[in-house]
Figure 1 (cartoon, rainbow, N blue to C red):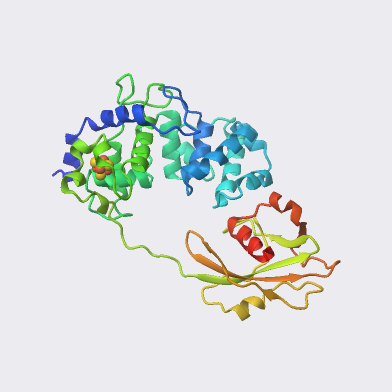
Figure 2: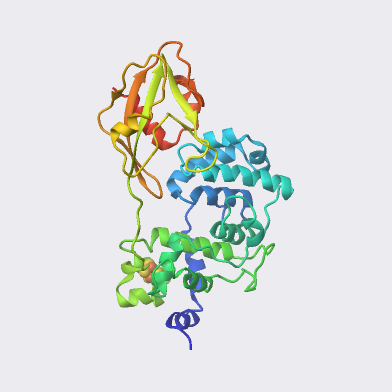
Amino acid sequence: MKTKQQTIADDSAGRPALLLEWYDRHRRRLPWRPPPGEGADPYRVWLSEIMLQQTGVKTVGPYFEKFVTRWPDVEALGRASLDDVLRMWAGLGYYSRARNLHACAVAVLRDHGGAFPDTEQGLQSLPGIGPYTAAAIAAIAFGRRTMPIDGNIERVVSRLFAVEEPLPQAKPLIQQLATTLLGASRAGDAKSRAGDANSRAGDSAQALMDLGSSICTPKKPACALCPLNGDCASLARGDQETFPRKAPKKTGALRRGAAFVVTRGDELLVRTRPEKGLLGGMTEVPTSHWLDAQDDKTALKQAPSVRGIARWHRKAGVVTHVFTHFPLQLVVHTARAAARARAPKGMRWVPLSTLKDEALPNVMRKVIAHGLGE
Ligand code: SF4
């Protein structure tokens, strides 16, 4: 027996065409999108998708422009140094993406002759490309009939079909329903494939992304402007905003610690974080461990030992930062080292004037600003 959602999907064969008509009129202009009718450059699609993984379109725009100006193709990026890529990435957050970005460009150059694989499977074999990004690149750059499911598309589809199952369990069903929204190729061939210049699979995916970000918004969706309002199940019921259904969220516990801003004249004491893990390979001032229940005294005991430091000065207030899995609160202690004091093992002095060239994550920018502030 067919489910209610399957029946709705079957009954709405006109949706893909309505969606594409709407996209042709209202598509967002984004730096990585080619003009209408032109094929997309896999390098630009891939770069934008990696940047957009945990960051919004507005923030990504200028970074994308900077990257393509400096490295106009995957070959140029594959030959760049990881340090340069990390420096250019600084401020975008989630630095493992930058490391994978570089590793991926190197792999495309070394293992694929400088051309991205054109299948989801081939793309997923590359560093930093998971199922969503592979589907997005396959559809947008190569016209594969696949639908990448991001938060926007999840919302539109769950509302359109009134999917009662909560996320994340509903993902396979949403994927199945979203696929029914893929448009046929311009030539009318529903089996559009890689190399088919007429394929509109990528446009269908981008149409849903745009619809989700501009019309089917989390709060107060503008249903009157929606091209699919003729047969939207949740609109008919009047409870659009309650979709997608979600299981209750678990947030990580607050972690606490201390950060140490040590100056020697006009130099600052820093170190490089381990390659693997959170903020891998980025620059930071020394800190204590970041632990759930840590008091200030215990954190201060982990201060670096540097000649000339008689006492630590605790700055008023705390620096807070929210990572994906936990919020962090750092107390900042400052001190002045003796003129010729050596940096402890694994640390180094950098002139304050060249700090901007260091790959400093946002949390460290905040700590340094707080520590050096009056
Ligand atoms: S009609 Fe409203 S709720 Fe339904 S898909 Fe369109 S914007 Fe979303």
